[in-house]
Amino acid sequence: MHPVSRTDTDVSPLVHAEEASHIDLMRVLFVIAAVLMILPLPWFPHFLEPLTPILVIFFSGALILSAALFEERGPWKIALADVVFSFLGFSLAAYAATRLADDTPTTLTLLRLALTIVFAFALYTSGRALVRAVRSAVRARREERERLALAGEQEVPSLAEEMSEPYNAGARVS
Image (tube, rainbow, N blue to C red; front, top):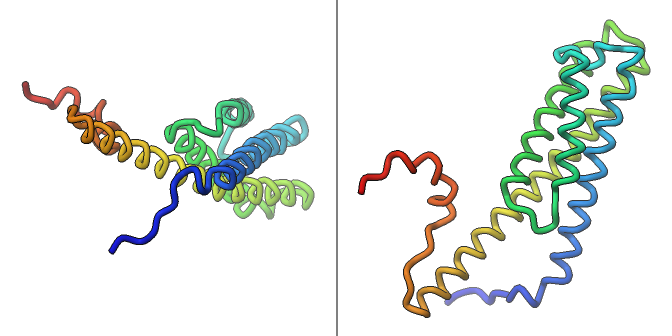
């Protein structure tokens, strides 16, 4: 026997409110992280030591652009990019906070730790958004397959097939 399942209309207000709050949080976290990365650069150009100041500026710009592109019903590809940015930022900030702590003033170390914490929250939030986006895409594919099966039309490619499309395009044999 199948478990009782809820329809999208049963949970949609709650789901939409949760998605909106996570997306708003993602936007805020990315903008805060970008500001924390740019703020100390005039006084400490090697704030995030592995990166040069110009790369810190480009990474900050990419964070702000990613925050602007993140939409409530955005594709899973944007959520995946946010996970990647969050992971890179977290790794970079954590490295700078731990590796460079001995050579810098306490306030700079605390700023690096704050940046690490912001990216940790961003990584969690973007990971949750990615899971929701993939689940939503899978659910939409399943519904489309069921609709086409009822109509007697051809089958829709699976999400895995669609995701690997660019890689398999040259390998197909007619």
